[in-house]
Amino acid sequence: MEVALVPTATAMKRTFHTKGWGGRFACPKANLFFIAAAHTAQAAQWCSPTSLTATKDGAQIYIACATSNQLQIYDTASSRISRTIALPAPASGVALSLKEDQLYVTIPSTKSTVRIIEASSGRPVATIPTAHTTLAPVLSPDGKTLYVVNRFNDEVAVIDLAARKQTTRIPMVREPADAALTPDGKHLIVANALPAGRADKPPIAAEVTIVDTQSLTASAHIVLPNGSTSLRAVRISPDGRHAVVTHSLSRYYLPSTQIERGWIQTNAITLIDVAQSQRLATVLLDEVDRGAANPWGVAWSVDGSTLLVTQAGTHEVSAINFPDLLAKLPDSDPSGDLSFLAGIRRRIPLQGNGPRAIVTTAAHTYVASYFSDTLESIDRSAVASMAARLSPQQVPDQIRKGERLFNDGAISFQGWLSCNSCHSPDARVDALNWDLLNDGIGNPKNAKSLLLAHRTPPAMWHGIRETAEIAVRAGIRNILFTQRPEDDATAIDVFLKSLKPLPSPHLVDGKLSPAAQRGRRIFNDTKVACARCHPAGLYTDLKSYDVGTCGKTDESAQFDTPTLIETWRTGPYLHDGSAATMRDVVTTSNLGDKHGATSHLKPNEIDDLIAYLLSL
Ligand code: HEC
Ligand code: HEC
Image (cartoon, rainbow, N blue to C red; front, side, top):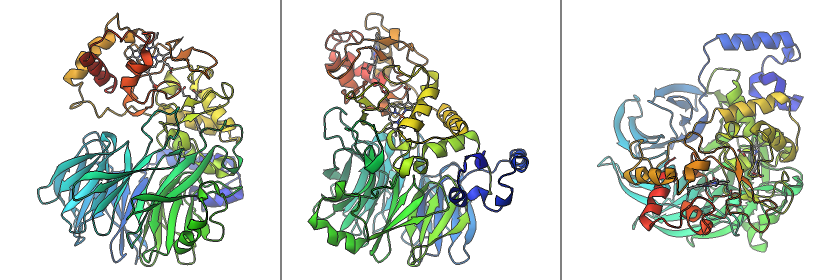
């Protein structure tokens, strides 16, 4: 229950749901009554705001909801949600046409669409099919082309709006999460969420891809500093000269013995010089004794003088004086400096929980918080105030509470990180190796996806934790360096157990391709023997084996057989992330045939086996 987890008066002020009945806060009976009432009433749907778009005059803000089938429209003059537009499914983003008479709304799924909607009436005009998990719609300056990313196809798609179809698909590095277009329309800058290579050989870092919109090819790949992962957003300054991308700068190469001073995780923005297609600098948002967990959204004030960054984990916005930041840069490399922003940035606390999307108008900055369903406005004097609630006040169920805690960096010691920092917001991977203490020091392990963790005991690559429940509690204690009530850990368990596998982008109409069908026969062949340890169902027999993958630093050759469900998105592979691709797993990492027998397979059979594995 909401009230039980609010430990201090400060936190209570920040926790939006407790507002207005603080007087009854200490009375258990009143709490029980409140909760019973909330559960008998029809549970209102959460909006979970995920993206904001403002009209040019700043009169209206379009709010895309990740968990309800509607767009909400906030009217800045009357300071209220003035209307909603019904959608067939939740949206991931909205762009406005040049005349602002039409909306381009991305509806993500395995078969996503872009909906063209008449802005005044909400009437659907057209539906354009795209691909797997479409988001980040961006309109060209001439209004003729819409760019989107198809996240799980690892690509940017180009949509011809006159023909109303997707015309070109441009490969990206891995899981593009956001895109922004230069004001002249010549370059699309794309943030790839995750590194793509093996995790045991530095540098390990995600990349920003620059697409030349004339040739429709990637013209540059900018590799971020070693340890950069979890890229969330990218925006370009109003003058078109700089781009900024938010991400974490992980110290994955240090044992996780302490959390102070960014020992495990720092939280950063990287500035890109657009004309040079080069990284200018990576700047830490943290301070010496105060982390800035999970940087997410980014925006410039309309005049370009202030750079605003949401810190989804600490429920704040950092407002940085941008000319001062540029002036400070040439003198030093700020990527390890925890006081670089001193004097040129304000940390603005919000009432909401989980601020992700941010947008600026001439008069204000608007920030939407995902878990509290709130929209706040920030004025010129850097004060945030509640602008609107996006759903009626309600008590989160255990799943939503667990998801919120999983993403909450404010519960960690000094706000340095959240579970999200290594497992992504939806509890998958960051593609890095970490030297956690569960199995001693000096033997880094690749972060595991938590999908099915509770159904596939034991936990951890060496199976050191008997169950995922134990691992969850150990994570709170030994990685977040904090203590929480048992009810919080239980809520995280409930959230993790609720995760559903996402269908693979390698499926064709939801079914195995002909190659994958042939691959399934190879997988099940008793000589090849994959199904012996990875039997269909959970694709693990829950036992440990030596499959010849033991590295120099491993203290034991026995590893717990992992599930293969969703392996299409959990690379790099094996306990030490030493296999960048599935091909590596079944070829170069299995030279002795100890991990199933693959050396006798012909090249086309290897291809088929890979097609099957990537379809699970
Ligand atoms: C610093 C990065 C990091 C953070 C933060 C982190 N984890 Fe992990 N987690 C890992 C790595 C790496 C592994 C695999 C370690 C191993 O197998 O030895 C792992 C494994 C797990 C597992 C076991 C999964 C399985 O099926 O074997 C669970 C459960 C888990 N983490 C939950 C959490 C929770 C809950 C939080 C937040 C309280 C959290 N983690 C925070 C890096 C992290
Ligand atoms: C004797 C049991 C056994 C057999 C047979 C076996 N595996 Fe595995 N598999 C394991 C174990 C144990 C691991 C973990 C090894 C490690 O992390 O170093 C693993 C890991 C994997 C992974 C990496 C998953 C990840 O998330 O990193 C893939 C993919 C995989 N196996 C596929 C296969 C295929 C394909 C075959 C048949 C050619 C096969 N396995 C045969 C036990 C087995």
